[in-house]
Image (cartoon, rainbow, N blue to C red; front, side):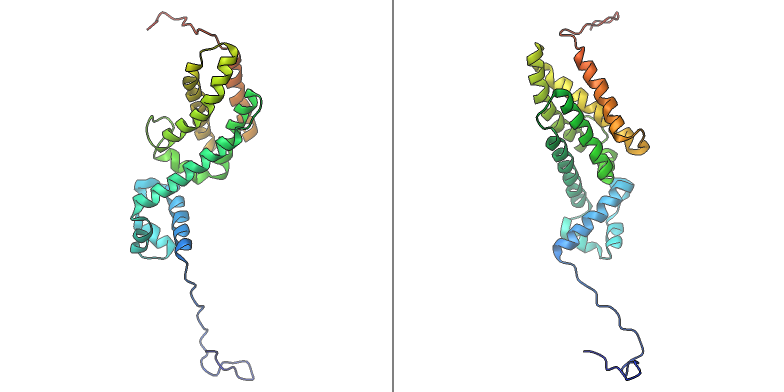
Length: 224
């Protein structure tokens, strides 16, 4: 129904302003809204510091709506983490295109730094509740997945240089772990610039690999 309007422009039915009609979200839109809010809060406060009440309040809904979509905070967190893990893994594996081995190292370093720069909240979530230094947890498993991709590349390079390809997994873990830990440090300092960080990472990794001994030896007193 439309209010009648007088010739002078005033409303003949009421002088009170009409309230805008509230637009209802679809189920998919509401789910995405809750994921976005949860992602921000988990990045800021961590899993333990975030409550269903706060998520619901930020979304302007009641707690049962959150439970209806995700079954609770745990379910929402699991979906957020899974999406971030897939995003990072896709970026790293997608960056590893054919080329010189040193260029592949550059591509891997840039992919992780790109993710940190573009998806900062996501990286904070991954490392907050499952730090890079841990051997178990979501981020540790993700790093292991990325290392597997690098392992295949290193295996071919080792074989071509006469090294034992069985050691490729060890070196893959070392290289990826180095980049991941540096990325965690760079997350907050953001200095030097991304390209410079990538260059220094590759400088250390490549020249270390370039001068690799076929049979590494210990020079200290301890031998076991």
